[in-house]
Image (cartoon, rainbow, N blue to C red; front, top):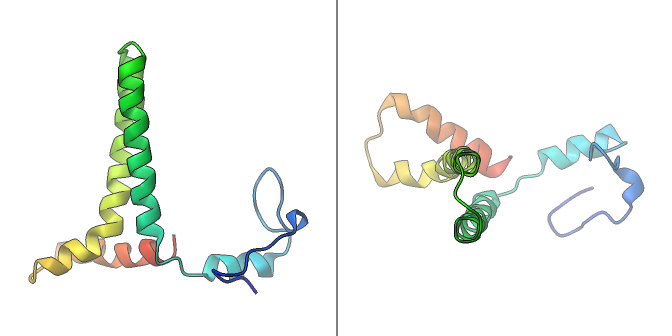
Length: 114
């Protein structure tokens, strides 16, 4: 089986272009594996994206395409980061409204099984 400590070594198990498993059972097992550190991976990706953004602003001429593309990616990554940490944020405030409970549930799902 697949777990966090054991990585597969055979590239024949995965399709090269689509990155899907040839064996559907192995793919289901991989998708069922929890990934509790996912929110920290997203945080690292967010910080790397921010550093790339700073370098691009300093080096490239400021164009509207640069602003729109980085702005869209920034908003998307910010939303994903918020969803990942929504569980901790909502637990800090003791009374969460019922309209925010879907964020809490989706945060648990996304953080553990992306």
